[in-house]
Length: 507
Image (cartoon, rainbow, N blue to C red; front, side, top):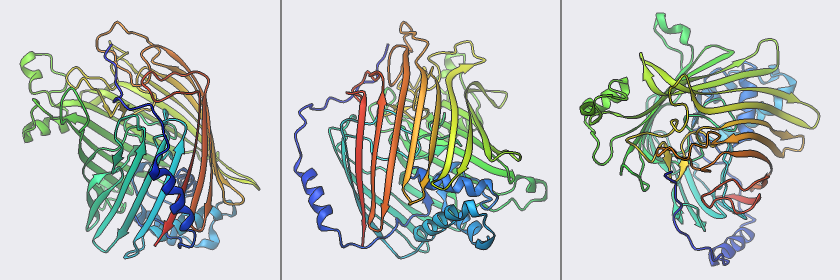
């Protein structure tokens, strides 16, 4: 089996001077003023905000597609401001106020914001879900962002201690963008989450670190104006091409993606997804080859002469979220195919879930249940295929982590979760997952590859998170317990992971 190796890092964990300096800086900065981050979109790092947006969407207050991150602020703000606040149902007034306040602060122009964040933990983070932020044992992040009439930027520099991938300094989530009518183009690296799920998406998640490149995204979701396409309703799209610059079998391969989302009715959102690994050292990168990639032509050639020009490793599929008319709940699902047959995804992995909105005197939020199956159905070779490829042998991975599902391939995992706000404004969440990871255990297969374990492993893990907001920032405490040490590549040293972070905003 070809294993995914960790870069060698020293295990001598001594306190660093910069770590002590961070605490001193935070103490000395207590008189700074609060200012929310100025960004044109909502990223993957705020699960509480996402809960509020979904609740407002299910109620028909937010009418645009919401299941693609980054999610643009402009359309959401327009929907909220078009709603009479007095007509908002009582159980949604807090959600309405939180989202509208956050949106107005984020969209203010010529109001740069700065922040510093310190995160510490006893070990690296193995499983990542929507809303997770820090990755390593210790991180210090400095951030500055701003928006003008035509430009936007976010600069983040993060120093890490004992990082799993050996990258002690990185600039994840930094970008520079330009507004062009109803479009925003940018260069940089941003985390993406494509899908309605909460614990893991099959095609794009925050599991792997973001890759650097260029992207183009629709700024606000206006309905289609052509008569025969008006049924589509509000729609949005995002396209990107980034560079996979880690150590790989095919050096300097590209990651390409495109998604189109629309809401034909208020209760239904549909998204069409497509990603691919393309080009790189020794692989074709011509325009004609890129056209074949985008159209699905010449995928998985049989003839050896055709394999030389084979466009790349492609994934494609569809996901949906349907707000049930007779219940305060939503049904969602996703299916992603490894290959193409007749213009449609084939050899598919699937996910299904259900979310319920809850409101009580002490809690406002949602609970969910979802199931991920990451082996391929209707395929001759079901196992060791998803996220793997005979040409791009490093697979659909970056820095040793899968770009898609956090569980990697050949896993069956069921998850339960609750996320929301307490009556005092605190944000809480709890998640529980169980199942089998890499359950086929085909170690004799030379193409077998998994980023967590090389053998079948039972998963049983529970996590919890608490966040308290202040006028100057927030404090967050989280923990995860896994009944077995299942990771074989150095990220999990103990069954229990405990982490804490402090974020401070200032002028």
